[in-house]
Image 1 (tube, one colour):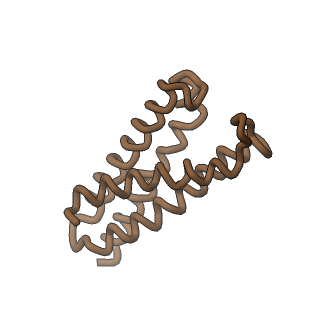
Image 2: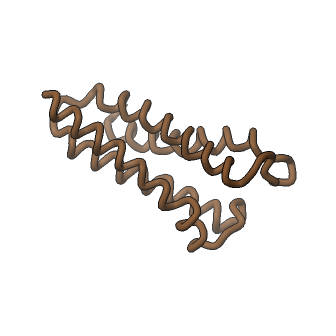
Length: 127
């Protein structure tokens, strides 16, 4: 698979897996089974876990420019997640305004480039 297709595919997976897991924590009417805070925490934890696993998998094929690669994949994955989330907000799947989205969810996704850049930096130091 080409590098750029892999980056986009992994970015989509980072969004899809937490989304699917999230269904375990809401009822048929869309109400949170435990609490909204717990739901958001689970989503971030699952997304982070999937993101780290995929970042490690991605970096296995990288031999140089680790920090640059970490920046690239982190930004692309962040943008992919923001775009899909904002589409879901705009069609009413996530009932909130764009402003509320960024204060409640969107800013939390900044962890994506943080761990990809951190991993890239760690790999650079190891070389």
